[in-house]
Image (cartoon, rainbow, N blue to C red):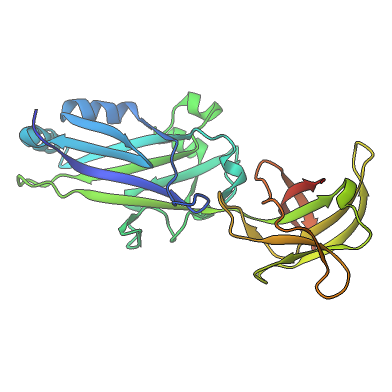
Length: 285
């Protein structure tokens, strides 16, 4: 066995994560892709945030012979499943769609790059333009009938062109997902339900407005504050929100740093006539 060299790699980044790498992705090769991997003596390997196809340097002639029988091009297709099933809560655009999923194809011909790699999305980050109809993907054979009922989270198609020379030009592809943005909403309960509290951003980036007094389903009263701006949902947020009580000067500090809103408490709310994503937190000290 010789030294394995990359034929191509696909890396997936995500703005939600502090290091930008979207780990926990399972790339499942299409049956046709498995046939190519076996016939051309290739190796498929999961990477920390993607997948790579590698060829044995000592068996490169096998790769070239196999490619010649396929007119010099080898199509690879992967169904990608995300292990963290809450990913839709922190991913933009909205991923929960029963009729379409993102589909990335090296043949779309974008000239852009992402993190120094060939970009597979239509724009710099994934948008609704990258979604494909599941029914159409089944008709093309990219997905099976079973996938129609339980589709993957997205699909990656790579067409590898194999030249006639001994050298094989490795290609690096990249996909960039954005973190979802949402309004943050704090419910102040118990001892924090004071008569005159307010929330400030220590970095003066976000303003909060008082939305009134509410009665929660368990009959507990609460004061509600909501951000006036959309805030990115991040694994490790840099925002520093502080709860104060009105008084002399800047007011009395009640909580030096409010907890970051959790993506697990995601809801929808009509704000200024538009349905918006809202992350809710309940503060009771």
